[in-house]
Length: 107
Image 1 (cartoon, rainbow, N blue to C red):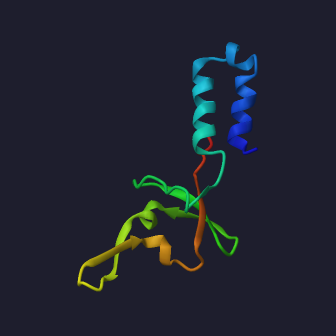
Image 2: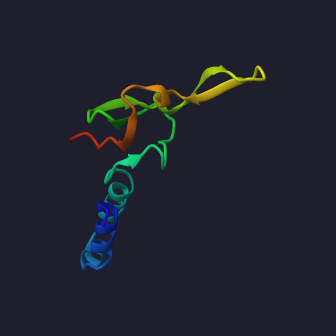
C-alpha cells in the first residue's frame, strides 16, 4: 500500500479527524497530496511554474531541478519541415525517472 493510501486510511478511521482543528486537517491533506511519494515521469509531470522539485535520476542520484526542465523545447525539424518539440528532460543523461514536490522549509 502506498504511503498516501495508508495515511488516508488512518485518518479516515481515526478519532483524530473529529477532534483536530480544520487547519491541521488541511495541512495533512496537502502533505498527502503533494509530499508523500515519488511520481514517475511516465505517469505525470509537475505543473510548470517558477519553482523546483526533487528529481531522481536513473543513476540513483537525487537533485533539486528547476521546472524549466519539464517544459517543451524545440528539438529538431520533422520530415515535412515542421518544427518538433520535446520535453527538455527527455534527452538528459542520466535520465529523469521520478519527481517529488519539495517539502516546506523549516520555520
